Image (cartoon, rainbow, N blue to C red; front, side):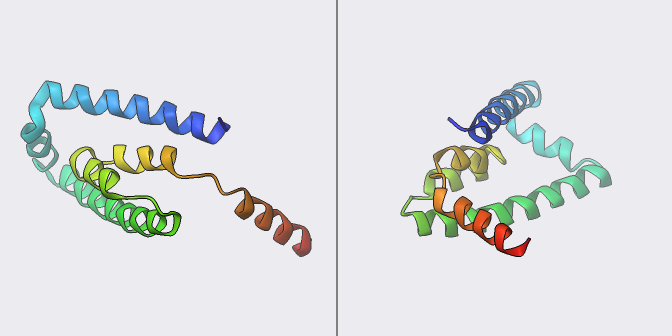
Length: 110
């Protein structure tokens, strides 16, 4: 397993635990009530929706290119936020060809 996948596993585990604790403390509806209780929470919530929307578009297109169903990761994203894209990054195949093409391009540029 690459160091990138190990880092994603660590972030996914920690964020899932944090999300579970938050939902345990205030409930699923209470989570959104707290988030939208003031302008700072609204700003963070809107920013989160924009970022997750962009992640959903990328994830859906990328999954289609790799012949993977994005449905479970889209549902995870809609239910638990960043858990979906993080889980997708674990499922997504590593692109050895893309890394070598990038390296070749960098070598030509220097």
